[in-house]
Image (tube, rainbow, N blue to C red; front, side, top):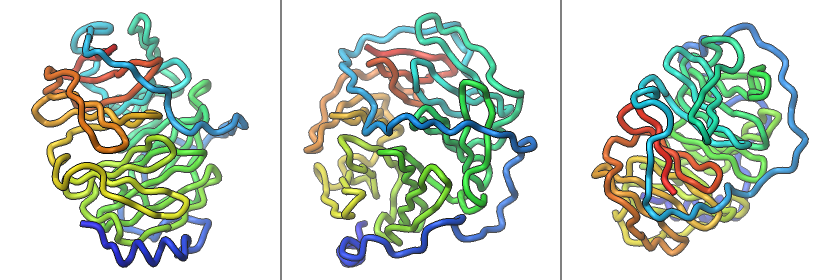
Amino acid sequence: MRNAILVMILGGLIIVSSCGGAKPANTAAPAASPAATTSTTSTAPSTTARQDVAVTGKWELVGKEGAWKGTVDMVGMDGFIWSVEKDGSLYKTDPASGGSSQVGEKGSFQNLKLIEGMDHMLWTVEGDSLYKSDPSTGKWERSGEGGGWNRTIDMVGLNGILYSVEPDGSLWKTDKSGNDTLIDKGGFKGVTHLTAMGGKLYTIEEGTLYQTDPNTLKWEQIGKEGDFANINVMEGVNSFIFMIDKAGNLYKVDASGTKTKLGDSYGDTTILTTLNGKLWTVEGGSLYKTS
């Protein structure tokens, strides 16, 4: 549940923790990654959100059936799907043909927990550290001082900032130089999912959807209490959030919390992303696109 008093206080103060460095130290083992390489940082402007997706519910298999059984996570960015396998290898997939090719050294992304695309760079949580990678070359570097990311539940990129949440309800922001700032301690307890839509952060906390302005920390409940308790995966675009529940139902959710059912055959979905105006899902080890 929301800690309303704490959030109101933090909304006035905005920043409650020091900038720079890593999150608090922890005892988790470091990510098993190869020796650091140099990555070229993009200077392209930040994007507010992914483009809107017009979904009618029509879906089709992309590539070979069962080819995605080893995929841990994926994200759509710059015209391709970027995915990481269980062995820590990064792949680039052409959405038109479904053909994939390995990028960088095999096993460079071991212990992957999360992947996000922002400003033409891939951001990954591996073990207890955050890394940024240039997908055009596969070169990567650790972001910040390392450590402190082993408790991260979810993260999303918005306006050149990575926002992440932890089990104790803490909300962090991390800039592209790796500087971490705690901006809300404990106000997001019970959080299970985090995404962005229309410049705002959206979280599911104990089954209820909330909207938060990342600049002021002002928040409001969206939709009915407990109405999102069974959501398995969700992905925000500019005007909607797409959600798939544990029963395999696909929904489009607007800023008021209104759910529109688009399909009901997504029962095995473990991963969801958007690219080129379509939804992309991994279900039963296969890649599908929904248009």
